[in-house]
Image (cartoon, rainbow, N blue to C red):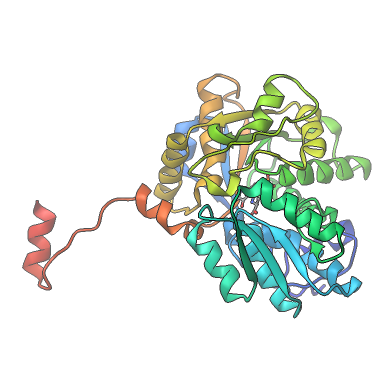
Amino acid sequence: EDFSGSGVWRYADALPFDEGVTIQEGDTPLYEVPDVAAAADVADVRVKHEGMNPTGSFKDRGMTVGVRVADELGVGRLACASTGNTSAALAAYGARADTPVLVLLPAGKVAAGKVAQAALHGARICEVDGNFDACLDVVAELADRGEAYLLNSLNPFRLEGQKTIAFEILEQSRAATGEWPDRIVLPVGNAGNTAALYKAFRELVAAGAMAESEMPTLTGVQAEGAAPMVEAVEADRDHVERWDDVETRATAIRIGNPVNAPKALPGIYGTGGTAVAVSDDQITDAQRMLAGDGVGVEPASAASVAGLLELRERGEIDSGERVVCLTTGHLLKDPDAAAEAGGDTTPVPADADGVLDALAE
Ligand code: F0G
């Protein structure tokens, strides 16, 4: 069958429509990562690189469904709050659907590549003097007042599209290793993916395609400076308490009020998973390690690998486990962070001897 090249709409049977506003999203690679595997020392580690989507993050999977719904409703304006990737994806899919897009960004806290994408795809960009959570409060009120259609992950159609991450991980893992993974480790901001993956598993169980015991354990990773979910899981609570002050180099997950926590916490508890916080230095080390395997990711994405290594260190992940780490966004999203994590450049004269002299130093 023809799904217009979209890896998401290939799973239309599990989605609320047969097709959407598509830019050929999904169908992202599941990579082997030898350096990470050596460091983690578990039975198998693979990286599901969602940075390989059209706009460079997993958000495209949600937008192809969400913008389709908005199109059908005939709304006049699409809107989101964003730490950057949601705005980049919404700007592109809104442009594709010829619908105006408004994005609210935390001023000075969004990586350069993401702002550039939103700008070039033609979104109206408003910078808010406040963090992401404040932006979301405002945009939710605009939606309540009928001024815009909300396309943050509070919108359940977004999560429908993001379920396909789970379907692909299961299919690709089985094709590569003959088995489904025991565990999926993923960065957590608003906890939309955590909720979406759990919904996908439950639907597979309900359809008789998966035994409850086969659900991979969902393991959420947050940055130390923005870890309200980890706090809740460590206290075994069924709700998250909002952090007003958040800070991390992984600006994509600089979030203090994970709005999907009511759907995500049952996913962590229901699969026997956990949540863990990592430092910015651990995130940067993991970003470098992935880069050494040829896989370029933004800091928030590297949090998944940092979380895996931290939990191995603590002995909370068994050496026999088969693990998939989700890397949510591309290296080029945050060129400043990448340049800082990478090595320095060397000024040389424009001749071969000059270059060799510099190399010898
Ligand atoms: N990784 C990246 C690269 C992200 O951009 C986000 C969220 C997450 C992880 C967290 O995912 O919310 O499903 O737990 N970014 C949103 C945005 C908030 O505005 O782009 P989650």
